[in-house]
Picture 1 (cartoon, one colour):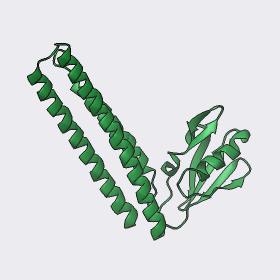
Picture 2 (cartoon, helix red, strand yellow):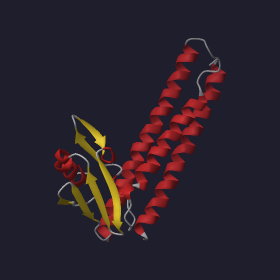
Picture 3 (cartoon, rainbow, N blue to C red):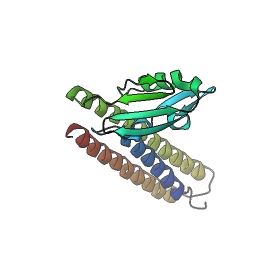
Length: 186
């Protein structure tokens, strides 16, 4: 670390933010059922919040229906509540330890609300990337202040960090635009 900061580590962390964003927008449905739709759902289970797929099995029995088989009978109400409160516009039907989730037709209003959710995911990803950038810049300032690197190296490194940040944010904007087109034109 004689040259200030580890750019590969910053790049890895930014790529992690992009991968999390890709996972989030993949969960937004575009007309056909997919088990990924329920990926963002977190269930209050055993004193903590866990992903739905850690307390239940998710299946796609029909093109416009999801099935959720809950492993623990005591978790049925918590899973039902988590799905209803997930901002995905889904209304599960209880059937013993199973939930059937009919997927409503995507009307114009629903499409617009899905685009809003995609924008929320985008903002969350951009904040994560800016936090990585801030960490890198703080590391450079500290290294320069401590005399580990010179001002010219610090300036050069900070330009690289800024370019990496700009490139990553433009990737996220491109992915958002693709998802918007997919949602609005299915």
